[in-house]
Length: 543
Ligand code: ACM
Image 1: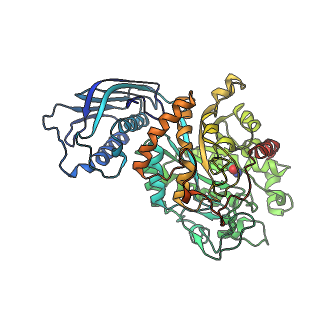
Image 2: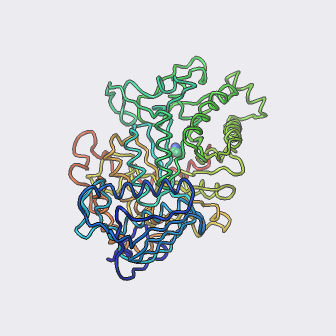
Image 3: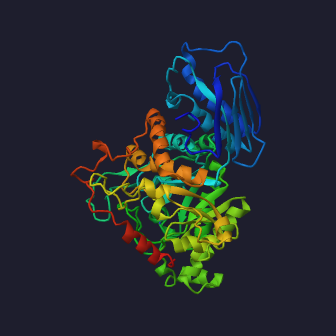
């Protein structure tokens, strides 16, 4: 397989020519572009050339050069021309440059993916050729739940590298939930001092209490660092502050925002549950402080406000919430749910930030005209959202990668499944059965990893890869056209993941130490994906 045929995701056009281009430490770079592109290229070259601290072939003739521009073509697009004398990138913007740099990296020997490696005897050589490329979808994302289990900054930065290696361009961080609040607040420090940890953990709804404190959070500086690191790799960080449900940790930190008289605590079971905050002006003021801090730290053009799985039964009975509902002209809690999200969305809009909600928020009217919806439930929920709003496809099937990858007995305990590599490869973000208007509303898709059953980085790798490789191809190339060809190319691509030290799931099943064994991680029941899908359709019309 020649290097241009081995690219993953597959470019629109890629054709080898003859000869090689040699990258050297002293190579002259001509760069015209934005500050982000300058910093991106600088960091890319510094990373690539870092292994050059030893004697390796060095071109001293000065006869090769790199030329990069980020202002030719549509956003996200790039053309790469590699000749023996010149490596030339003409991209539409810095995201396009990032895509091109990933392609360049994939054309070099696999050991370039190591943090430091002696290059092969002939040096870092890329075979000559031409790539003309554009993404099928502008939003190619990954959602990581850092709440149920926390992943430290170093893991997130590494995750960014793994995403960039597949030309993903969004990292959605699910920062808050019932089981923890994972970001510092200078204005409300109780959020990270109280909300960021639980005294004990139960795995699953009826697991035994382990009696061990568990927690962690990112400082605002950490978050800024993650966002900046990601930006230099063509990835936008999308923070999620999940309200008004999934808020046990918020209520533990600020009990006044919850139902009066109810005990408030960070949930100790890593399972969905808990009630909601009061959708009042006082709660909005509190959240404004938090949102401002997050926007300032990340520079995020999008903030996800959650809106899913909110139990709001108590709202009509509570005098303060009932008064707020009356003032807003809402007679039903569901209307108030929509009103509350819209109001926060306007706050974001005033700061130039687009709001995102899960599909329940769309159903209750908790959206502005330009809001983005992530529909996680059935096809009905996705189709309904696409009729009126921009949609990022994130349906449980097949984008919840925390579900098992096969029906093998050896898979580890999870929420069920299977959601296989083939299921992901067959995913159609914009189904033919939708109207052209609905299809146009699909701006992309993303995979999610909810971490109820994911306590370690190694298990995260296992669940993400290689399914993420298939989703990358769907979102960048539009589809996996030929599964046999894709599998062969993926086999080749796994060597890059080996060099990066990724604990992916081998194509034929888990390694012994990746399986569940006979203890607590034993797979407890065979997959029930059919039943799960039927259940999702059945709840898709409920807020
Ligand atoms: C979700 O899975 N509740 C978004």
